[in-house]
Image (cartoon, rainbow, N blue to C red; front, side):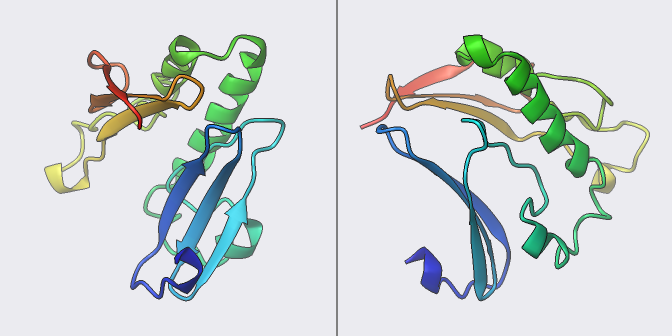
Length: 150
């Protein structure tokens, strides 16, 4: 189904399975590429990660900080590799380096409302425990709710 999606816009989907397989699908009209974890970690932000699609990315100038946010998240997770759990992942998603244009993104009050961006939701899925934890807004702002996955 995904390989036949002729959609009008670009999107990204991260798909994981309880058996340990994870893929990231970068999709744009009439094309897609699949990315795989590197050393067990995969991150993605608001730009194409694939070098083949990156040259076609028209949104990089709008959110220039997206480039470093994905790399920073990867570095934070790699530094915690031996103790990755829900808490350490939440800490990484709550990172405020380069605030307000950080991984945990907050509105920049210096900008007009229409130019203010923020993280809309933070989601952590544990496929071993079959749980999904989520909070509305930036990762640092509220309690995570827990939902059981089927």
